[in-house]
Image (cartoon, rainbow, N blue to C red; front, top):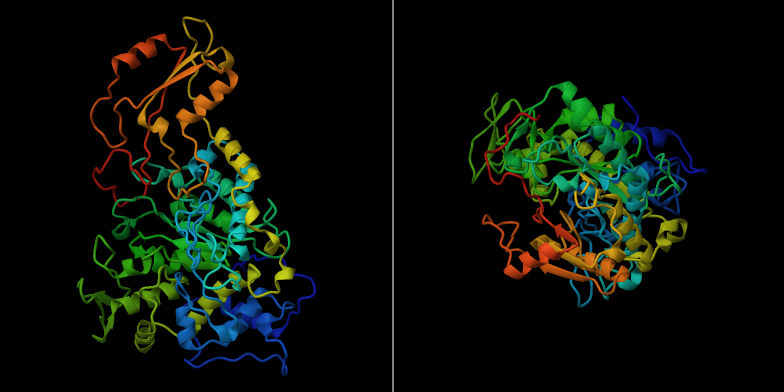
Length: 579
């Protein structure tokens, strides 16, 4: 078994028998025999004035194990949901929402409970180009800078002065530390334009995904480009998604991606292995699809044997939102799946698992949640099946034990400890980052730099009239420009785009740049009757046709502004076999 690579141990921390015991707990297979359903206790050779989980001399993992041992079973269960995990005041645990988004800018603040008179969504933050766009730069250092800027803003949204006055991620009180777990980056290999949601990842090459996604994680988590920690803490926690083979958008909750082991390891999970081993990504999100017939959220082979035991993952794993339900729901909402020796009753209204040996029945939501936990899927997004009733039913059926829950919680709270949540604020340098970083001039300049670097020149032919290529243009000598296409006057920020205060369309950008060089230049715009959803021909007015003939330059803007759009429309569903 490969030991998970974690943050460097800070000087002065003590090690001993407890550390070994905690490591054994976390690294054990989730389906191993566990402790009985009684509240565990932790002792450390005598009374202490400071609980072990607050003792900063201890490792984050030791402290997390001690914290978990002090929770009741019901408290433990409610901590394994992503949305509104409740506070435990007696232990100093704040209410927490793990579901926050930051794919190419802060897009969702799930823990924002009091934003004053404004709205909590859409989030006003710096918007960077989509992952697919920035991949065109082939520049890992740029991706590192972007990731670092985004997590700066994640910390900025924890500025105490924003509570009750503006968008923030502090939760229900200004005294809270706030939430720092984000669901990004997406590193699914994008091989086919029929699959959809192409702009979310860095392309089809697993090596490129690993390099760019890894540097996003390093920047985002506050690490050096080589993956080592800058100060022993996470600036924010990244969650790589969707693990694994989340290829087809249409019908994704009810299909299976079927591959051999070589394809699975060498292509479809290679980038995840790199993010785990080199960038030490804090979290993974499992996908909706099944993998070789077993739902990803309950797949022990991919979640445990590959991610933990082979690749060395030591962070937390969350389902995609609603993902645990796909274990037992009927197609196309789910896989209607049960592990041997169980079979399903095929019911939509009252799904059951039936033991083929004994005939015993267990409700499928209880069984599905148990198998997700046993496979190594720790958090339920958004939490529907993670209830005390379901857990107790699974325990009675012999599908789950409290030790499995403890193992999941230790992983989750180790990451939260790693962000500095349970340490004195003065010891975490990232707590000095304030709201001034949000949409700062430096971040806007970096977004512009990334956008410039994402441009791809496919062709630059020699013009017959001039005997030279069209580009580069001397803006000062251009007098008449015509801009065509509806998208020229549309700001499209892509999947998981946010709402920056400054948004500039291509039409405006062209006009501003041209007139800065030539104040007398004219720019005529015509949407040409086009639409990203229309099927009819474009039309040009008589005036526009005349302007085109007289223009020094004509710019045509075409494409799509539909997030998640699949090229080719709603054609036949992609085959079950991942290609």
